[in-house]
Image (cartoon, rainbow, N blue to C red; front, side):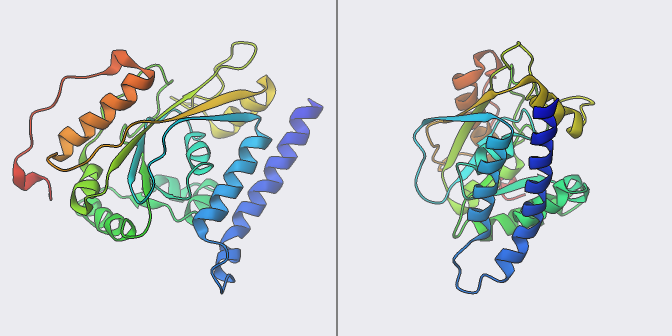
Length: 256
């Protein structure tokens, strides 16, 4: 309990540091610290506090690209952000959560809002961002326990097609704790505080991040590009989740 208490205090203090990062960005007149680089540093420290060992495999593609990953936990974001100075796409509800929403805002997260025109406006913002930096999103749209990879929603793959940026799939998986407890998955009715306490109580885990081969979007529509990315990730961690290739979209649907 003493170890858990001390680590809880470290997490609390680190959250306060995270909330102060936008101030550093604002006063950074000469561009010494970018929002993305500060976020990378912050997430690396967070993983150390949580006793999450990061193992990276595969070849990271240089240059601006669209990265997509399977979704298991809120830990997915610290794991990817610890390796990539990038920005994420999240559902709009995350921006309204206390603390987590503030941290997401500080990291420059793009939000997918429901309703007519929400996707179009988001894609326009991402397209502008891809002119100088990369983006990450989780096309399953929800979390799993990591044993399967759900079908990828194709709409945001339009950003790669329109900007002609390569897609690099990233496969994520987490080990169990030493006592066999699966502490990382954040699914169902799980509560963030309870999930963090479970991580702290059961001890170290390993997060594995696998860079899959990049995919050239040329010749793809959204559905086929989403399927290609899904297949690449499944081949790395969950072969039973591989699906039949989708029918081609009408040409006019790509920009819809």
